[in-house]
Amino acid sequence: MYIVLEGIDGAGKSTQIELLKEWLIANGLDVETVVEPTDGDVGKLIRKILTYPNATDDNIQKTLGLLFAADRLVLMDKLEKLESENKVIISDRSFYSSLVYQKPQEWIYEINKYAKIPDLVLLMDLDVATSVSRCGKEDTFENEEFLTVVKDAYQELAESNDNFKVINANNGVNKVSSDIKKAVAPLFDICADCIQ
Image (cartoon, rainbow, N blue to C red; front, side):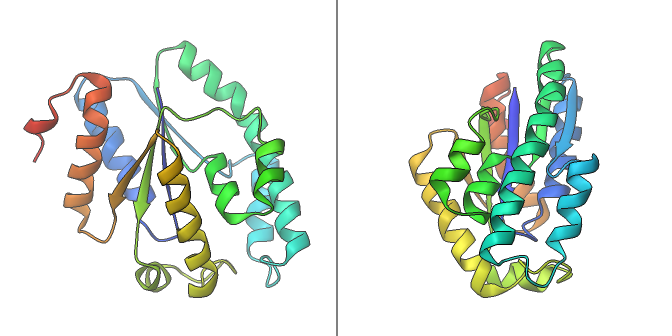
């Protein structure tokens, strides 16, 4: 099972991934977490470029699109191995991030055609102003104008893909965690109505 948390910066993905992992382990499941970009060489280069002042420029975005696709291909071996071991994989981002952050979308689809499709995508829906206030502003992406476009693109993806569940990330940590558990529970025959 491959579960991905997506959303604009500051939505609480990292926190919620840890809470979800702990809960799934407590329910007897073997869980591994992954993150995009990875900690490998390509991922490190991506993280460096994300801090550039011109990171939102067209050519830099295309370069990032290619680098993310390459980083994802490296990650595929790990995902396949974890799935063969019957582990639940929880990922902080997937190729859907590239579809909303980099353009043009048709090209991003093409260069990610070998990326694994998540079984479930939990879209952490957060108000843009809240996102900007939570971010450290280390990346050029962390501004309202850019994130508004990204948030709208995420909403379009959620409306057109059956594997998406939208989670209101404006709520407190415990409420968001409960909503995530309720979305995930049916995949593992866990009683969703028993979750508070």
